[in-house]
Amino acid sequence: MAKVKITQVKSGIDRSKRQKLTLQALGLRKMHASVEHELNPQIQGMIKKVNHLVKVEEV
Image 1: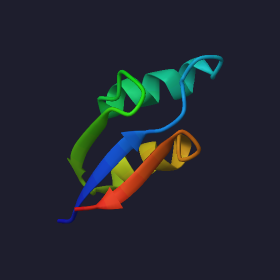
Image 2: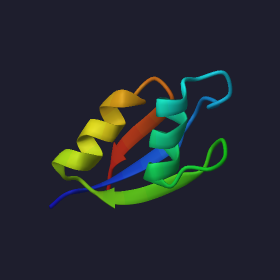
Image 3: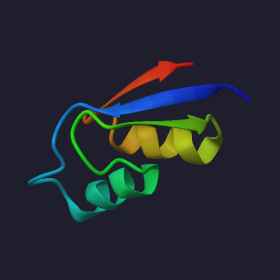
Image 4: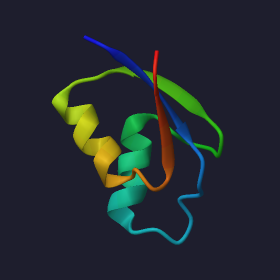
């Protein structure tokens, strides 16, 4: 499977609780923090929910 690098580019402050929890589930705690994940349907769904807060790059 492909790997993706997810970087938080916008703050989770003043977002819905669901979006904040999605960022935490992805492993993003701070601004400009990056994590790598295997691209699977679960991760794709999480990215889709917070795509306005993150930047996604293929590794």
